[in-house]
Image 1 (cartoon, rainbow, N blue to C red):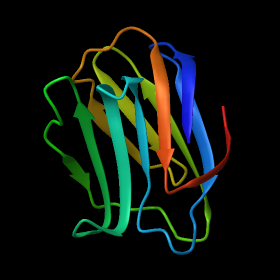
Image 2 (image 1 turned 180 degrees about the horizontal axis):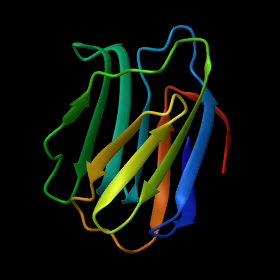
Image 3 (image 1 turned 45 degrees about the vertical axis):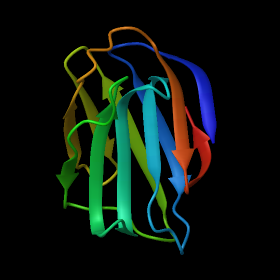
Length: 129
């Protein structure tokens, strides 16, 4: 699912609520201006690309993908609802998970303008705000 024209400004938060399917290998949320300027690729992996119960974060610019950042604290469970809040400013993105865990990821692209696009994949997302 692609959500365009988010009009997410620095200092604001995008709240994503969804249900993780029982058979999910992982899901991804890409937040950025477009497909060539992704400020945050947030990719929890249950068992995918050699990662087990790992959150992978990255960014992408016109040159390509950056260096991955991995987090092994993994609060997601298959078959359950989840909620994620992503807040960004000029220097970093803060990802708040419903279990109280908070992750920081640098705003490598330095995006100060509106985030315009969000892509959700392999994740049933019944609501967002």
